Length: 346
Ligand SMILES: Cc1cc2nc3c(=O)[nH]c(=O)nc-3n(C[C@H](O)[C@H](O)[C@H](O)COP(=O)(O)O)c2cc1C
Image (tube, rainbow, N blue to C red; front, side, top):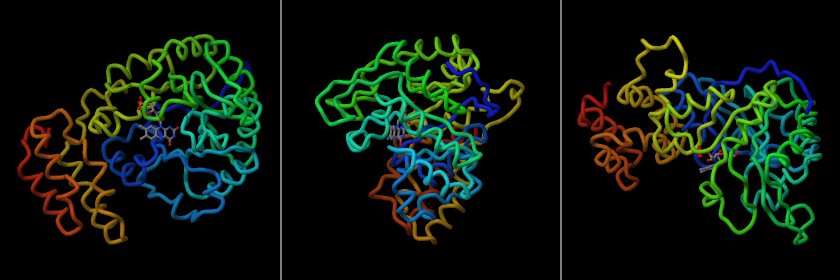
């Protein structure tokens, strides 16, 4: 393994790139809840950065920062161009997606399918590094199981087990990526939907922990299945960082408790749910005026009372049939006036 030390700090916690979820409204509200996590964009293809409406796709408010941009690319040329074009938008780092199992992505030799071509991943990472001074990171799986993605034959490609993972890392570490975020579940490229592949096959944290034990100079962040502060704290005794996916939108108030991951923060009081809503209201007003849809603006709030008294009523108030551009501010005020005080303000 290429022995090198990146001087890029790994945040203890990050919010995963998630298509249709980690859009800029979600990130704005996440940042109200926590100053402690690195936030990712959704996966954006290099092609759409090169040919699409770049300002629309890449612009974000600086209040969201730090934000990492995740790109999907299938060749070094596109990756180079996309990173170069993103340089002035203020991202703190750029990440390469080597973990998405969806047909649409893997069929175009992007995402997890790239893991079957480690030399190509190495070349893409080198091209990304050449295009920017910012940290370049990679998000990948512990392995893949798929069919003929490279040459469209029916050859089965299987990368599983620690040695295959080492083989992959041996090659890509020569490009000196600044961090490896490892989703501790193999990608299944055929025969399983991306949704099912989020539960099957089982997670294997030990593969990631062993890697960090053996190569302690690599910056390693683990991903997959983390839902509580306790489980994150435990993982942080073994790796440099933990990436949170679904829990960030299924139980978003978890983010307000990230301060507990840092020693010396015992006296900090996290922002209350009520204050978080209040802080988000001016943003809603402004973004509605900019023509944004009320539903996408409200979506980051949906799980704010998850597991709490009154959560059913809260979800009803914010249900899509209730929420309209003209009614949203009244609804939020009703929430602030009628939800249980101890949950709203503590
Ligand atoms: C709705 C959704 C969209 C996702 N989109 C992306 C993506 O754009 N890029 C990526 O690398 N992973 C994507 N993922 C995978 C997550 O980043 C993460 O690796 C996965 O959910 C496992 O983490 P978790 O168990 O904490 O949810 C997505 C996951 C979900 C649920």
